[in-house]
Every structure is written in structure tokens, then in C-alpha cells.
Length: 87
Image 1 (tube, one colour):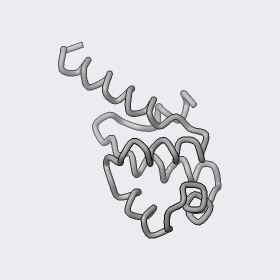
Image 2: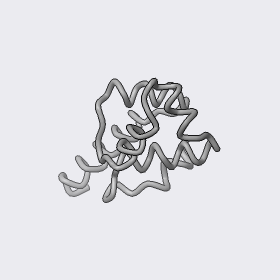
Image 3: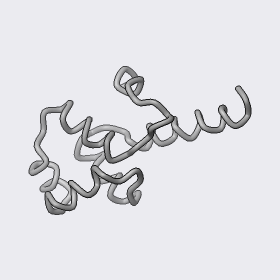
Image 4: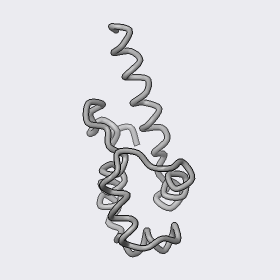
């Protein structure tokens, strides 16, 4: 997972884009993910456009894709704190 995390800059953190990128990386379809998280394809397209989403949905997506999106959020938070502290 560490190698994929390096692709994402903290300056343009966008959870929807990260989810879509991971979905494509795994070669899975939007229809497949929609069935896993019990929502429509249309709602997933909306998720892909959002910078942030509700944690319960993020948890479901993390489980479906077996990918820790919370870790990406945490890494972003830590990088921002270091940036603010001038490190």
C-alpha cells in the first residue's frame, strides 16, 4: 500500500479521486462497488466528485476495496500539521 500512497500529493487531497483511482487500479467496475456498498452507480459518481465523504461510507468502501482510505486521511492530517509547524 505504501507505494500507491506516494502517488497522492497532500496539496490536492481529494478522497473521491483517491477512491476512483484505487477502484481503477484494482480493475473493478463502478457497478461492482455500488453493489458492495449498497448504493447506486449515480451516487458513486457523486462520491468521486467529493473531496470528503461521510466516515460510514468511507468505511464501507474501504472494506469493499480492502484498502485503508482512513490511513490516507491520517497521513494527510499529519503532513498538514508538519507543514503548519514548519517542519
